[in-house]
Amino acid sequence: MNRTYIVHSIILLTFCLSACVHNNTESLMNIDINGLDFKSSQLLVNNKVVKGSEVPMDSTLEFRLYGLHGFKIINYKAFIGTSMFIEDSSGKVLFHHEDIFSKYDSLGTDTSLINRQLGIYLEIAPPMKKGACYIWHIKIWDMKKENNYIQSAIKIKTI
Image (cartoon, rainbow, N blue to C red; front, side, top):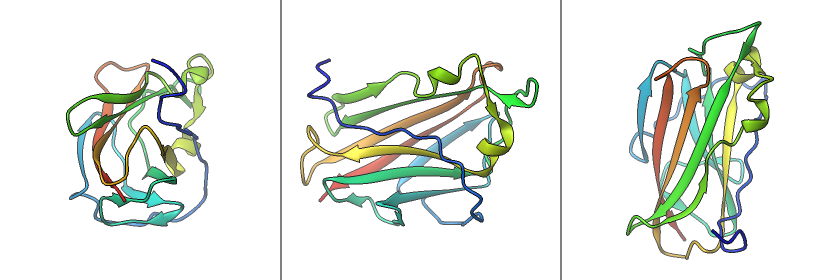
């Protein structure tokens, strides 16, 4: 896939000491949990919590998990895998990132950092189009324990 045509995405593992905030984002997303779990989640646009599916073009959408746990721990480290893709209403995949945290494959990540907060970001930009509907798929898995994951499908309408 031509990288100039791909949705610009910024993926960051964020580590914050903020308190858990409980928001109902159930109507915007489907979440499938198998083994891994979390305390709460938020959807944010440009660092502000949103409750609807409308996201402005040229903004940053974040899926944030608090209290992520359930990983097989090796030497106080968790080995997290994360993938994402965005598809339009016809099912065409506009962008796919196979393993966002691949640079941590052999290093692992301190479990206390993952437990505080995990943020996954998507830039809302071309080839996405204003007024269109999309689904942002995210999968987080334990690289050291088979069938240990969280999957989400987040509905987006660009405005």
